[in-house]
Length: 64
Image (cartoon, rainbow, N blue to C red; front, top):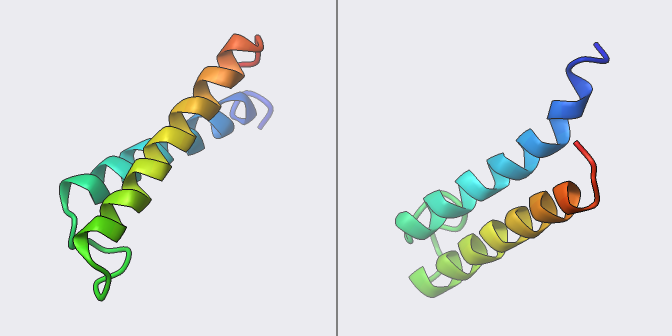
């Protein structure tokens, strides 16, 4: 189980980036069908930026 743990954090942040990109690509997508395209795009951008910053910060700090 210990061998899997180092991959859980990066995998979660990478998944956040993938979901954010999917929301940007499909602006009337799965998050908020009643929202405007701009709201969904904003949610996607926030997801991609948050995931990228978290992954970069993790590796720059020397974490794996």
